[in-house]
Image (cartoon, rainbow, N blue to C red; front, side):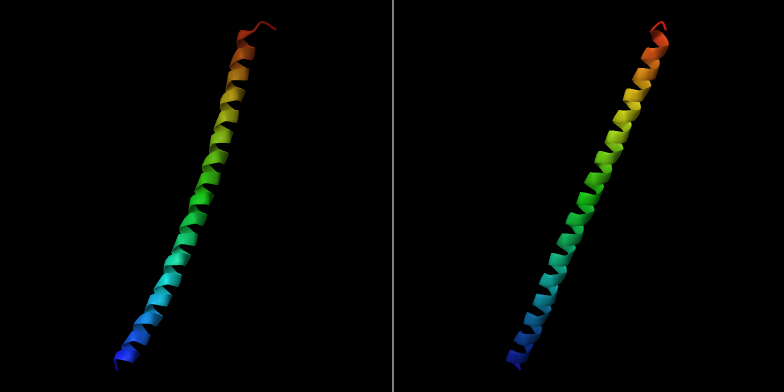
Amino acid sequence: MTSFINQMMESKLKKAEVTIADQGMIAAAKSQHYEDKFKTVTQEAQTAIKRANRDAQAKLDPA
């Protein structure tokens, strides 16, 4: 009986380890996704700011 319980617990432990590893990979993928998205948004914002600065400067400079 003890052997059966040990086997059952080992099986559950292995499943838990796989689940934990899967969750770690999912978390890493989500983190990378949001880092990439942040970089894109940041680059777009910088481009918009530069464009706005050029437009404003063009309006200030005599033609």
